[in-house]
Image (cartoon, rainbow over all chains, first blue to last red; front, side):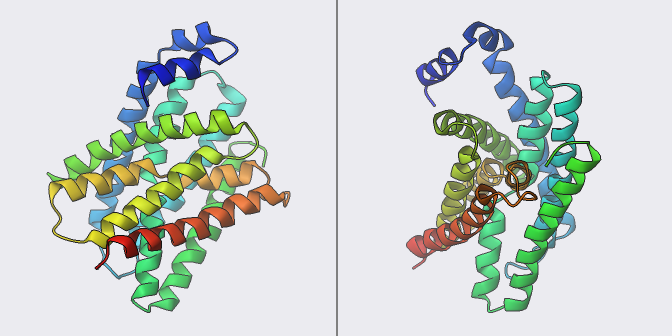
Amino acid sequence: MAPGQTEGTVSSHPHPRSQLSRGPLRSLAAVLGGGVLGSAARAGIGELMSHPADGFPASVLAVNLIGSFLLGYLVSRWERTAPDRRWSVQFWGIGLLGSFTTFSTFSVDLIMLVDAARVGPAVTYLMASLVGGLASALLGLRLGGGAT
Amino acid sequence: MSLVILSLAGGVGAVARYTVSGFAQERAGAGFPAGTMLVNLSGAFMLGLLVGAGGATSPWVIGLAGFLGGFTTYSTWMVETLRIGLVRLRPLAFINLLGGLVGGVALAALGRSLTNG
């Protein structure tokens, strides 16, 4: 996004001054820092639970379920306790947990399993990711006291 | 070394997700998480392209894979699906869930077929 577009987005906000004073660069730094750490954690778990290219992607399943639980918990905590702490949301939520979990690898892993004619593992991976991810996020939201 | 490239690229991917999804969400309006849908579907398509192209795991390939890992997000998709009312059986929540799943798989497959062969 060009700097001009960012300004347009910010100035179209009903309170442009308060938005600007929070510092767009600080927001980007928080997302970047969280994103680096989240990606490193996902890569680290991937090393520990490595599998062949057409094998069962257990590490991606694990990070997606853990990340969904933690994000659900944090989102509901923020809603009740600190709705104005944008920096924590950007670092922990958008940056760290956003990058720790991954949708692109999930999609590609799924077609790799189907391609390798491993229908059983593909169905297991799909159901565990969807039902498990929703259950994890729901548990996190409820534990944090958030509404669903 | 590849861990460093992957992590840094993932951070850049997160910043790209934050700006692109924020930009799209502002235009789509509240009610439906269009921003997350956009980054997830486009990211799945791009990873499909990358995987289809195959080749050696050069630093560039590792960097692009890392970027797309950080650009797309699973946790936000799950939490947003619940927040827009999956438990209350709201149709939009099912559209978000099934649209993301079917769209992601279809676009990843399409991307891979475009560069494969």
